[in-house]
Figure 1 (cartoon, one colour):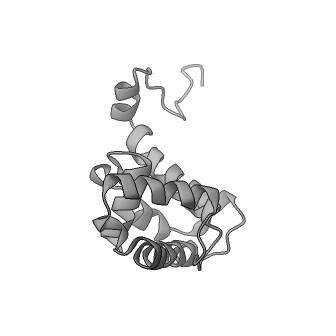
Figure 2 (spheres, rainbow, N blue to C red; figure 1 turned 90 degrees about the vertical axis):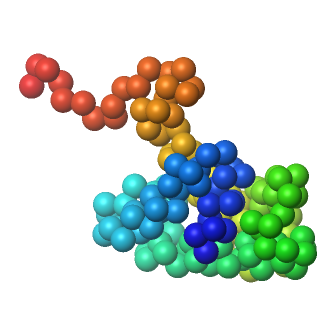
Figure 3 (tube, helix red, strand yellow; figure 1 turned 180 degrees about the horizontal axis):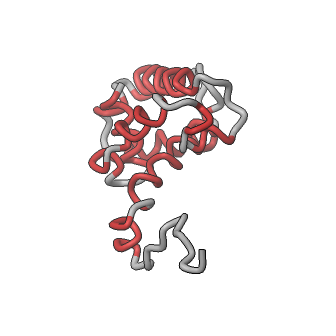
Amino acid sequence: MVELLDSVCDTLAPGAGEAGVAHFIDDQLAKPHRDCLLIVRYLSVKVPFKEFYMSALGAIDHVARKEFGAPFQQLSDERKAAFVTKLRDGNFQSWRGPPSQRVYFVLRSDAVDVVYGTEEGFENLGVPYMPHIWPDARW
């Protein structure tokens, strides 16, 4: 499932796999849900969140094989892009999992977090990095 997760997230935000999206998600899922930094925490998804991810990845694998004829990670870049467009739009006939549009939003958010939510990511965007929580010198 790691290869599938990396491949989907790389399609949503190029570089997510190399940036460690699977490790990031796995690390966050191992934490108590109140400490989890994943966007899924804020979407009324039942805990444990791991069930959402496993169900989502299972649905992605099923649809890729049934409607695209191969595992997602073996699809061409063009077919991967077409797949995630259908995922975003909720246009799969054989989808069996959490709502596909929610899956798209969650995985895209996770991918963007690891690619752009770092000092290096900010630098790549040409945006000055400012830590989210920085002690005020007045305190």
